[in-house]
Amino acid sequence: MEFNSSSPRTIPVVSTFANPFDNNYDDTNSLTGVNGQTRKPIALWPGMYHSPVTYALWETRSKTFERFLDPPKDAPPQSELLTKTPKQSRTSILYSFSSDHILREQYRDPWNEVRIGKLLEDLDALAGTISVKHCCDDDNTTRPLLLVTASVDKIVLKKPISVDIDLKIVGSAVWVGWSSIDIQLEVLQSTKETSDTSDSVALIANFIFVARDSMTGKAAPVNRLSSETEQEKLLFEEAEARSKLRKKKKKVEEKKEFENGEVNRLEALLAEGRIFCDMPALADRDSILLRDTHLENSLICQPQQRNIHGRIFGGFLMHRAFELAFSTAYAFAGLVPYFLEVDHVDFLRPVDVGDFLRIKSCVLYTEHEDSEKPLINIEVVAHVTRPELRSSEVSNTFYFTFTVRREAKAMNNGFRIRKVVPATEEEARRVLKRMDADSLESNKGKSK
Image (cartoon, rainbow, N blue to C red; front, side):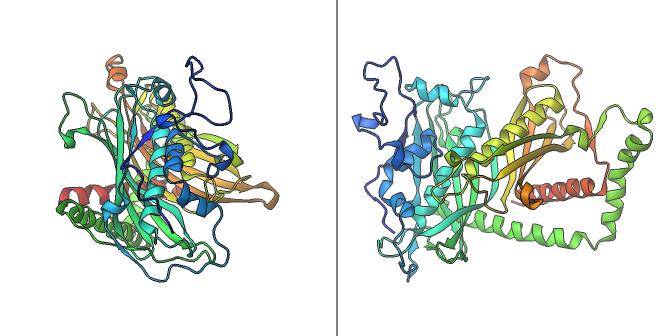
C-alpha cells in the first residue's frame, strides 16, 4: 500500500463552502483550495460524506485512498509485517478559525464554542486516516486492509473549545495488538494565557480500529509498533492497560449473572421504581422513571453518508448520537447541558446504505456527589431495523456524560437534578452494567 510521504506534517482545514462575497467566487463543481490549487471535483471524493476535515484528508492523501476505491483485483495480502514507529503515523490538522470565518461558521454552536458533534466526526475521520498510515506496506501490488472502528474507548473534554481561536488535532498510533490499533488524538487550543502545551490540551480521545482482510472479511494482522521516546513508551503502557481493562470488563459482565450480590443490588434499584408503578401518588417527587426520559430519532441511511468502504461513516453515527444525547440531557435537566465525556462507544455491526436506523436514548442514572457539578449519564442505542424481515439488531451503543452549564445553573438557584429509577429488571441491569464499568474506570484512574 502506497502512502504519499511528502504530505505536510500539519494538514490545513478550510471551509467546504465558497464565499459568495469573495471576488474570486466561482460557482462550479470544483473550489479553490489552499495555495490557489483547484480541489478535485466531488465525483472523485471517497464515499460521499464530507466535512472540512474529510475533505482536507482526501486532498492530502488521494493516492492512498484511490486504492481503496479501486483495489487491485486478485492482489495478494501483505506478505511480511513491518515495524513502524508512532512518528510514522503521526498526523495533525489545523483549523484556522481566527482567519477563516466561513469555516468558523460551519463549526459554531449557539454558545460560541465548537460543535462537539462535528468534532466527533472529525476525530473518527482522522483516526481512520492514522490507522491507514500505520497499516501501509509501501507495496502497490498488495490488497489494502479493511480498517473499521471497533470502539471508542474514551473521549474527555478538559476545557471549553472556542470557535474564535485556531484549533489543532494531533494523533498517532500508540499501541497495536494482533489485528487492533489504539489511536490517541489530542485537540489543542492555545491562548496567550495557556502557552504551555499541557494547558493547551482541550480534549483527549482514544479510538480502537480493527483490521479485516478486504477479500475474506476475516481478522488480519497489522504492522508492529516500536515506541522510541519516553512519552511514546508511556502512551503504549497506558494503552495496554486500557486493553486489559476492556477484557476485565467483559469477564466481570459474564460473572455478574452468577453472583448472589447482584440480586440484592437489583432489588435495591427496583424498590423505588415499584412505588412509581404501584403507588404513583406516593412516589418521590425528586425522582423520575427511566422510561420517562426516553427520546428517539429515526432515519433512512443515505448514499451521501457512506465512507470509502461503502458503509455508513462512523463519525456520522457518533454525531447523530451526540445530538440526541444532548437533547435528552436538555429535556431532562431543564437547563442547557454541558458535555463532559464520551464514556464508551461500541460499533457492533456495520450500518449500510438504505438501512432504517432507529436511535433511542435515555438517562441511565445521575450523580449528585458534587452539587456544583451534577452528572447526567446518557445511553444511546442505535438499531438497524428491517420491517420486511421483522428484525431489529443493535448496531451501536454510546454512553455520554453531561453536566449543566454554570451560567444556566447560576440563574436558577433552586435547581436540582432528579434521580432516575428503573422500573424493570432489564432497565436495572443496564444501569448496574454501566455503573460497574464506570467504577472500574475510576478505580484504574486512582491506582495510577
